[in-house]
Image (cartoon, rainbow over all chains, first blue to last red; front, side, top):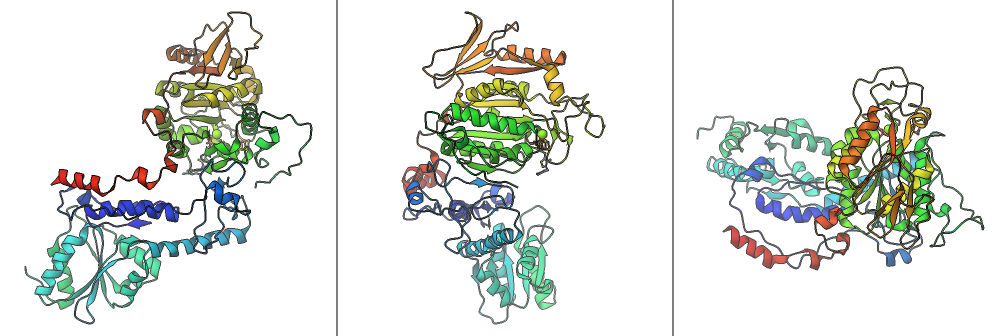
Length: 257
Length: 350
Ligand SMILES: Cc1ncc(C[n+]2csc(CCOP(=O)(O)OP(=O)(O)O)c2C)c(N)n1
Ligand code: SF4
Ligand SMILES: [Mg+2]
């Protein structure tokens, strides 16, 4: 799982959320910061903590739960969401122990070389990723007034430059629809936005358009639809650069700022 | 493959204080090669846990990757087990140790797993004094991947295919002593009488206990030019005085004459009684231990026995002053400082 905060304030929020997701989904969660967020001074909204929010400790069985069960299987998908119940070591004298293997295993964590069972295990993980996509933070979508505008996808510390670029573009009569991706696996809102646009700029601060590749691979989206717009000289991305590139492509003219 | 053994209890099997037999401490049927040293070590772990009346569900078995790292599947079926990524067992052990220090952590690794890919992790687990028993089932080779040289293989020891080894070995026991390991022993998988008490002592010890156990790989490193073969070890093993494990409250019943043994008290009050030999050796003096290992290496001997013990060390959780209650049982109200504390931090930033 990946979370993409846009600034230090969201780093704070997402780091707390990462613990909830990691325990719920029983998988590591990466909070993708970058050099700009990590090393430069930022002005952000105040860090806030809602005392009402509860930690999500996920599906963990206690001794009392085990006592009432006669069939504990570490990888049994009893809730049909791909996430199975686990136990901590030392919970119960007779029940709940299992071996976390580096090999193929059945629903009871026993070693197996049975291909059908292995397929079932791997298919369950697909279900788990689908569940994950419903739990991770939604993208932030900003639609323009104009029907048929091109879309823009961006994430992380590109935000501030992107919003400024949008203003420059608007002043020059170019409308764009924005989507800030905040997590992976991508959820339905991400796919809907992509579905609803004919042309989308994917703005990234890496040489290889990594997010664009991920979108193409995960969603089977055609390369022509996703236009790569990358900045990788090592400095934080600039609004002028984004505005200029989009303007030139949208209006077929050069933008002089 | 793993197979499960049918449990048919023999009425005459000896029982320990928990009413359990040795069979209750077994695991799945081993799939290692017949004669592999690793299986003998598993048998000694079972024996030590049986004799110490260990409750299996309070044990966590951790390992990396290798034939040795497969071994935890073959003992203590009733314990949780975790097969980590190659060389990464020490991190898992460190984390688990902090999450719940009340469990007994048995880490099983190989010379490849610990002395090559995982050496950085190995070093830091020692340096941090993680309270665990760390077994290196040392065969001088990468058994699982079919016999490449490992970093503990001796310079003069060729591989099965007759190739020369170009690099000198890492001595894990000296390294561990230098890094602050508080219980360091070397043994041989074929010497059950020596190994079982050493494991029992390591289990009762609080702090990082390293057991570097020469454990021949019959398939890839048991040939004439190997220095980790059964024959070679039998001919070059220089066992230190016998070690006896004396549980808390029991009288010492060793056979040595008065004054011929050294006693080391362990954290829980149990004791190790070491037979004195002409080595004139004090196992609580690190300098002494390092000297002895170096000297014996030079003579071409493999010194086995308890090499070093520091029974006053503080384990990781004490160094970090963690609460008595296991961290994995703390609830939100005990963990979360809440909005008021955050407000103070925010004020400090403006
Ligand atoms: C990251 C990674 N690198 C390499 C391997 C391949 N590999 C598997 S076991 C092993 C060496 C195991 O040697 P050792 O720890 O001595 O175990 P033994 O089989 O000798 O008991 C290697 C290199 C792997 N599984 N994972
Ligand atoms: S290959 Fe060697 S280390 Fe692996 S099981 Fe066989 S004898 Fe043991
Ligand atoms: Mg090995």
